[in-house]
Length: 387
Image (cartoon, rainbow, N blue to C red; front, side):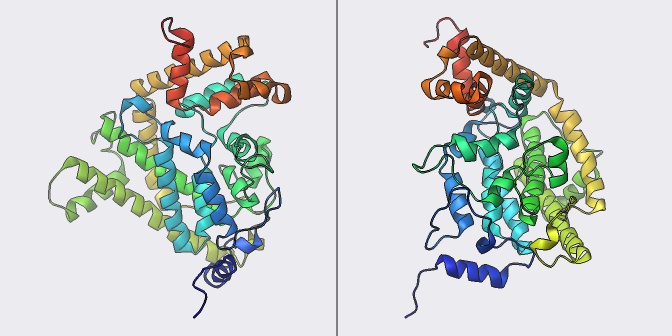
């Protein structure tokens, strides 16, 4: 009887047989900063994925929000549900293109680990405060989370992830953009797996923000009347189903909208791969343009939808109020700690001598969930709250 265990070597051999020539193979990884013996029956990227899932930063995503703050309702997306949706969309695309699904999933699960409480309002506030102290953005902070701030292993700091996953965390820019913006980069080609997660993130947040906006009542069908792609999926769903529950109808339209975009993306990317004659990883080196992208037709369809989201949802007075209030919370907390760092908990205070006061406070606040940040704010500013 043959050995029933699927070994790492077998997984690597199957990747060589099945994955496209331009896919990133596990055995070709640039490896980890701190050398480790690899697992007997998990690939190097499967281990990365598992390490991310068990990290503290990943668990905290459950109480970090997107557009709506946590106490607005249990049915709105959080950073965790968004991350899982990105992973699902990215895996679908990767499978269709015969890319490395394990690498794609690991990058997707890690892509928002550097986000602050209160979504982009929290990030913008920390970026403003840290402007003269090394700056702040969630991608580079996410890399610091997995490289330094997580503490799970005795022999090295962080999670000791592979170079490919670490580079994927800085995914929001091409190598050319990273250089132009002065961001740190990790050597290696701009892998198609990284590009897949980047665009899956766009698809996920556009569509779930649309869904949450309609659920909340901040967006209406009337707001979307002038959006051609919404009319297109509306007609598709109307033709498939009898009139029924509004929630079901909306879910089916969001589903159809995602499917329409993913299908276009896969087909257009395959065309670009053929046109670019991509024959392997080496053919991706030095490229500053995206291979994984929508067709020009789909880009033009998506533009009015994204403009409507910006004008009608992100600039809605209630969302602006929430964002402004969140910024005040973050700034007030930061200044309290800055005026008297003795109020920081011991682990955060220990970092001051090494990282400086501003960075130590920034790391501490960036790691907070919405709920924890609100609790800390109450302790400092509500006179009858216990400290």
